[in-house]
Amino acid sequence: GTARDGGGGTCACGPRARDVRELLTRGGDVRCAAVTEDDFRVASAGKLLWTSAFWLLCRSIAAERRMPRPMTVGEVVDSEHGAVAVRTLARELLDCAEASGELRRAADDEKNETREAITRAMFE
Image (tube, rainbow, N blue to C red; front, side, top):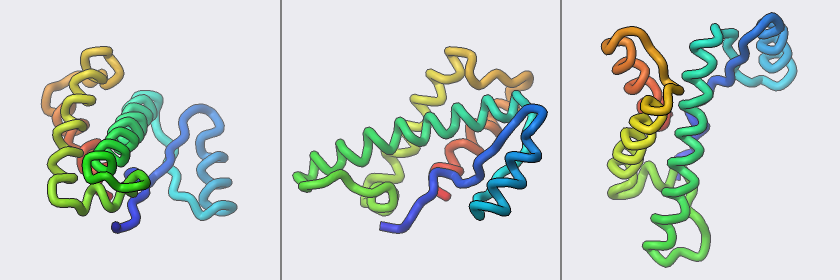
């Protein structure tokens, strides 16, 4: 399947965030953004959601197809029902993250934009 990077973009926050960004960008050719604490919390929840969804789907879809190994993220996304499964699971996990307070946003419009951005990043 197509290579996927989990939404790309590592981020850092805090007083040394710019230094971390510069180090990763220059030394490791890693995309990194210096962000606010609130944006960092959302990015962390998004990365946890991505990891949780794909660990589950890579194993379960492969087992369903009696494959001898887990599927890759690209294989899941590119599979017949994989993209639908990813979106469905992402919505369920986002509901859990919001209920726990991990995705705190002031306005409903902003919350919906956050949900869409996290879901969209799962396919990049």
